[in-house]
Length: 182
Image (cartoon, rainbow, N blue to C red):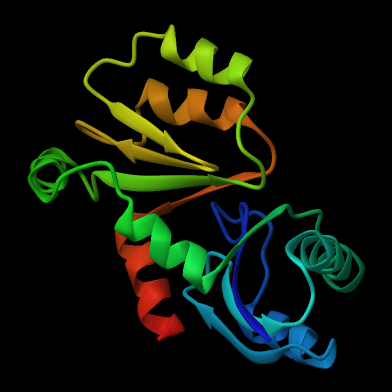
């Protein structure tokens, strides 16, 4: 069995795509997944499965559509992939602390894609003036370091164009998910 972290895109944000995590846990357990757990209301799920990632993604997206009448994209990582993500963070603790001190909430986020972004999309992103915001692409993860806020950032809007599906979590959430994996 593999421990997976399933990240749902756009759940319970601004009153849209409402989905109770308790109902989702029951539906996932009914499908036979083991050790189903959720973290906060934004669609962070831990579960064990013998399925591979593409099969799991397809099965979960279909179940959410059938059970909850929501068309939701998912991004999936194994617990080991999530741990490797944190270990390979391209920004120093000093850079992260500096960004957090300037930011309204948090300065470091990770946008996770199902597949690595295409080179044309990366080149388009490189050509833009993003102000003082920074990003680094590591495989299918995009580390985002915001100078002020992710809300008004050109980088936030542009990184969404790197691929589909994509979902973003703050660094605190990523670390909490790793803690839950352990």
